Length: 117
Image 1 (cartoon, one colour):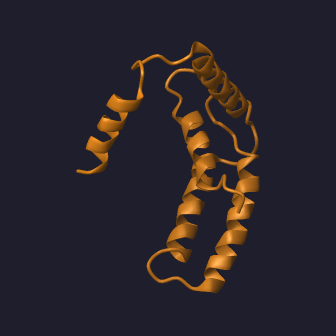
Image 2 (cartoon, helix red, strand yellow):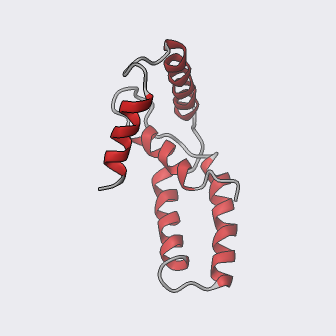
């Protein structure tokens, strides 16, 4: 109720021309995502990303739900670091370029532990 109208007001009052985005900015973003997914399509390691995601979920349920203990959280951080390394050895499973659920999942999986923890 507050943020939405405030964003509309901000856009109306600060944007000189709506919809004008420099093509170089758009091309830069496209290139970044093209490179990102090209790297993901080359992933052919032994790790199954869906198994890795399931194990991550199990770890979070065990360690970080309502009741938390510092020792379990410390152990979970160590395991998350190993997940980050295991992710590098994932297999994309599908190298198709159209509606590739596996590649999208591998990309999203990285967002779970990409922080410098």
